[in-house]
Each structure stands twice: as C-alpha cells, then as structure tokens.
Image (tube, rainbow, N blue to C red):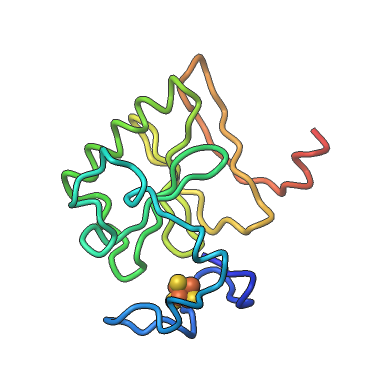
Length: 152
Ligand code: SF4
C-alpha cells in the first residue's frame, strides 16, 4: 500500500522494510503504519492459516468490500484451498449484501463473484469498478474514471 508520510507509492518496497526481519523503524513508524491493521489481525474468525506470512496475501477492506492483496511472487496463492473456497463463500454472501470481493496483484484486479472471475486488468487509483447487476447477480464489470462516474 502507499504510505503518504513516506511518499511511498503503492506496489513499491518501503525503504524501511528489511525482508526476513521486518520494519527497521517499528517503534517510530509513521502514524499510517501504526493505525493500519489487516483483517487477519482484527478478525477473530480468521484462523492461523490466514496469517499473511502463511497465506501470501493480505486481507484488507475498502468502502465496497474485501480486498485480497497478493504477494506478486505468489499471485495464485489465493486459489489454493482452503482459501479459494472461503473466498468464494465471501463472494456468495457479498452478492446478497452488496459487498465486493476483489483480488489484487500489483495494480491488476480481479472481481470474484460466486460463479465468475472478472479480470479487470490494471486499475489506476483514479479509476473505479462498476458492476452490472441483474437481481443480485453480477453479470458484468468494467472500469471507469472516477471523474466520469461523478458525472453520471
Ligand atoms: S511498518 Fe515500517 S516497513 Fe512497513 S510500511 Fe511502515 S515504515 Fe515501512
């Protein structure tokens, strides 16, 4: 994720991160880092296998739903069981509660629905996902500029 206080863009290594050791400035890390908690840290119902260092992805939330942020070195880790099955269950529940499930690998995004995966390609920070819904079922998904969305 981007860290504004460090001017660290999204999808780049933090200069304070030492692979294999962790944060080199942990006691003095920026406020954004101090207040951030991934879902595994705060959600009691996620078992130990969801720990990011085991699963190879980090679970976060957005305004729209759940984000599965993959380690680019393990882009398909989320497809392995038990992850794939549980992520699909979230998609099933999300379809009735208007919650999206998005898998992110770098800037590439995939919208996961109960029966489909919509490959959205690279989604820029100023772009948004628009879902076409019939009943509760997502039948299509596209990416548009956020500014265009405001004009609709
Ligand atoms: S916690 Fe430390 S290593 Fe991680 S982004 Fe913040 S400053 Fe960088």
